[in-house]
Length: 271
Image (tube, rainbow, N blue to C red; front, side, top):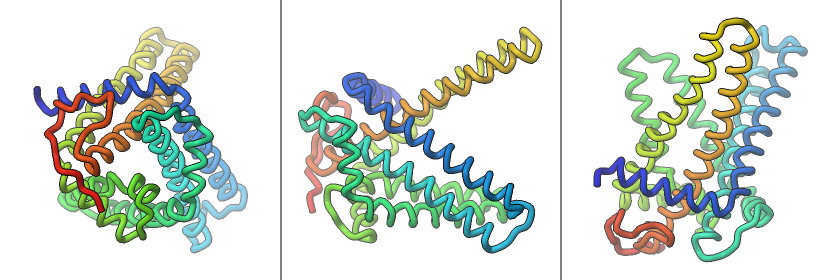
C-alpha cells in the first residue's frame, strides 16, 4: 500500500472517530462564524472611519490585531478539537464543554502561540509579495517546513506544559521522528480534501449552464455551504489525526481504533 493509500485509511479511521463524536464538528463551525464576525467588524470599522483609504500606522496595527484574533480563534478551537479527540482515543467520552474547558485552561499558551503564528504569517506574506517567482517558491517551502515543524505544537503546549521555545523544539523533535507519517498525512489529507473541494464547483457550473441570475446565485450559495461543511470536516479530521499521531510519537504506537500495521512501530519519544 502506497503513502496515499495509507493516508486514505488513516483519514477513514479519523472520520469514523468523528462520526462517533459528531458534536466535534461544531467547534470548527463556531470558529468559522466567529472569524467571519471578526473580519466583518474590523473591515466595517476601517471603512466607516475612513482608515481603509489611507495606509497609516493605526490601520496597520488594526489589521495586525485582526490577524492575531483570527489566529487565536482558529488555534483555540483547534485545541478544543484535539482535546476532545485525545479523550476519545484514551477511551473516554468527550464533550464540547470538556474540550473548551481544556482550551480555556491554556489561554496564555494559546495567545502566545497565536502571536508567534500571526507574526510569522505576516512576515512570510510580506516577503512573498516582494519576491519574484523563485523567491515565492522558496518562501512557500519555508512555510511548509514551518507548518511541519510545528505540527505537534498544540498537544505539546497543552499536555507537556513547556515554554514556547521548548514546545517548538519538542514539536520539531516529534516531527523528525515521525516525518514520514506526518508528511504522508499532511499531503494525503490535503490532496483528498482538495479533490473533494472541487465537487463544490458542480452546483456553480450547473447554475451557469442553466443561465440566469437566480440559478447561478443558488448554485453559488450551495457551493459555499458545501465548502464550509467540508472545511469543518477537514479541520476536525485533521485535529483527530494530530491527536492520534501525537500518541504514536510519544507512546510508540497508534491508539485504537487505528490499524497499527499502517505505520511502523517506534520507540516512544518521552520527555
